[in-house]
Image (tube, rainbow, N blue to C red; front, side):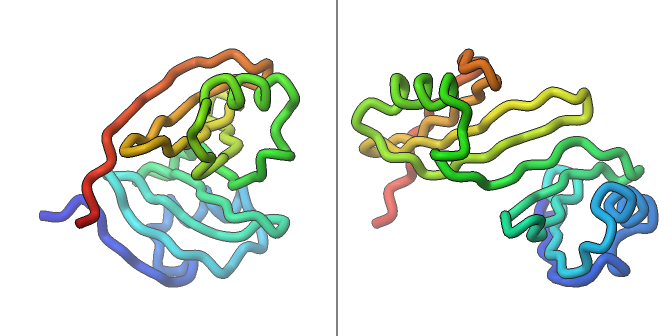
Length: 139
């Protein structure tokens, strides 16, 4: 059985507990796309002109929200850490994340040769975690 189920619909198609949590946290958002990954609902939408993803578990507990941002929107200490880490790589994706514990951090993906490095950096620029994975050959 596939762990990811795609569904492109409105809020009414979500389980009631998930929909209630989403509507409470993001009132008025109606155009959504959602899917299930590893048991959690990932709900994609646009908020204040930015691509955003809310993660909510099946019982309606909000887990985190990720918002796509630009390099220019990062705090100066985070930019410094990113520049130190990326070396000759290129930025692939930058997200501002807020989790259910009230913590905020930045998740930055860097592509360098055949590798993708994911960085988790706190708002003060401290590298919290780094994961490097080889990219699969597209040929």
